[in-house]
Each structure stands twice: as C-alpha cells, then as structure tokens.
Image 1 (cartoon, helix red, strand yellow):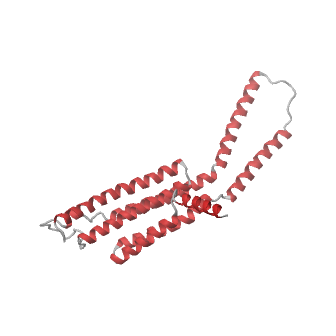
Image 2 (cartoon, one colour):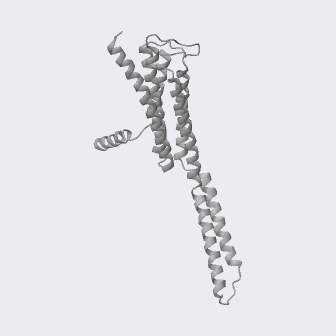
Image 3 (spheres, rainbow, N blue to C red):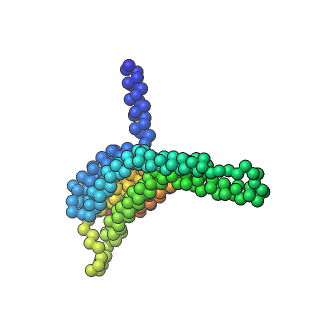
Length: 251
C-alpha cells in the first residue's frame, strides 16, 4: 500500500513539472502585482498588471471550455448527419429505377452526378464534423490576440524609460519631453517588472497551445512568445546599461 502511494505521488510530481499550470502563473502574478503596488502604487504599470492578472484568471474558464467536449454542438451535428442519411435512404427507396440498361451517355451523366453529390456530401460532413474545433480555435485565437495586445501595452509603458537619456550629463528637456522622476534603482526595478510581466504573458499564451495542440493555435502562441521575448530583450539591454553605469559610479 505504501509502495502504491509513493508511486502515485512520484507520477503526480513528474506530471506537475512537465507542463504549465495556470494556478502557478496566477500566483506569480499576484506576487508581482503586490510588488509593483508596494513600490509604484500610483503608476500606470500597476493597472496593467491588474488587467493582466484578470486576463490570466479569465483564461482558466476559457481553457476549461476549450478542453471540455461541447455536447450541444455534437448532438446537433449528429442529428443533422442522421437526418441527411435518412433523407438519402428514403429518397433511394422512393425512386423507381427503370429496368432498362442505360446508354453510355446516360451512364456518364449518372456517374458525374454521383461524384458531384459525393463531393458535396463529403464537404458537408467535413464542415459539420470540424465545426466544434473551428469554434474553439476561433475563441482561442481571440484570447491570444488579447494577450498580444497587452504585451504591446506593457512595451508602451517602458518606451520612455531610457537610461541613456535619463542620466546623461547636460540633458536639455523640452516642454514635451517625458518626465523622468525615477532614480537608477527605481528605473531598474520598473524595467524588471515589465520584463517579468512580458514573460508571464508568454507563459499564459503557451497554456492555450498546451491544451489545444492545433497547428494554427501553436503558431499563434509561438508568435506571442517570440514577441514578448523580443520586447524583453530590449528591456534587458536598458537594465544592463543601468547596471554598467552603477558599476562605474556606485551610489
């Protein structure tokens, strides 16, 4: 009995570390939101983190809906297919076939009509059978589009946080120049929070491709992850500039 319990625990732990879990992402977002609130309570980045947290939690219901079989659609499709089969059977039953052997021209016409009907029936069956997956794919792509949009919002918040301009000697700002009120440490923390948020956006997008390994979904999720990675790379370049400057002139 103890051996079985230990084996079950080992399998559960192995599965836990082989895939992403939404609860781990939302817990990380809760901690990140608290960290931003404690350091930058009045900044717009906190509102973005709150929105990202809500979006990640909404993904739980969406992913549950995606992975769960939609019985209403399946029953409707089955009824339509069954109705089509019965209509075809009754049509053949009511048609009175002539015992005479058709000519070659009539045979060609009948064969062409049969093939056209077969193609239409096959296309209709494919449309009905793939209806559920297409609806789920459309909803998933919409969720990934929202994640892509919030990644651009995060990138906009760090756009004016330029350490080269902020700490350059002899800077002459214009009336339209952005206000630069953060010191080197605060700016580094701000940029670090942006990078963490972008990473969590990519991980949330990966959840959809993990639960629905459709080629189009996987491609869209990968695009979101690549976008977040490229944005994070720009942010880390700024962080490295601040770090190098502090190494030269420590506070």
